[in-house]
Length: 383
Image: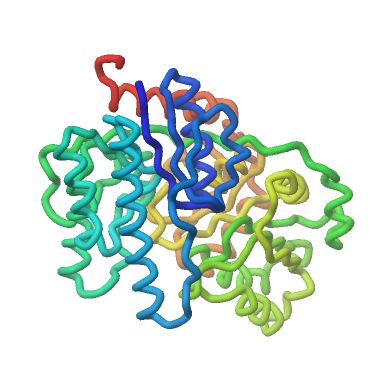
């Protein structure tokens, strides 16, 4: 069982997922070659055959036309490198760590040729609903169809219907696999030391917004809800800014100042190294996952919160985040995109008596089960 595993992302949740999934596949007896960019943290891939042949992530220009051209050029280079690696390595199974369809009509032919040559291609669809539209709607739908045109196995995390850009292709099989919890290194400084450094008291109730700062996390709604929340409710934001199309961190800092809650907020605006993640989660009381209704995928931050045994205040559209929070009582789930719901949610999670089922979640959503589902789909005869 040999597998070419392709990961375009070099940071963020997709990269973290790819690390755990590929390691679990290797543990399940699959011989994995991990194809990534030279900027990928390859020290996390001990024991795997790693090739850093994908081109470096382009620098995204502020100009829309230049940014789109860079994305297209990068997508074509990734497709060509993947096809070449599969042929040169003699791989008959390929798995993409994440599905995307942007400009697919212009780069998908090389991968369709690979599929026609008998190579079975799968992808993990973290976002099964493709509602971020680039260009006219007809182009978007065509791009989605073309992006799936070479795929035979799609792996998802719940039964949310997949957007195939039209009628579901008859030759595609879908498989539900769990999203495993993330292991987090023990805190370097510990809860008391980190809270003291950040200016929090032990009596404060600290909400943590962790990871890339982007519009869909509704951080602005939480800041507005803080105005009427108890004075002991504090916010810790740890993570880097998002893409050029997203509001920058400074927008939220200015909003906090305008609302009069800036003194109750702490900001650590950078990519947080793995060795420091445990400190931020140890310092927090509650993890904030107030996603918009457009968010319908699983959450890596949720799985980090589970590993750290921290309850969550969450919102999203229908999908695995909501299903996990409610099924395992992992915190309080609220209506998305609603500042009143956020305000009420703060009160509920501060006063509710919950019984989070951390262990049951970890057992039923392990990386071993994730890898087993992938292996059985790609290698139904065991080889």
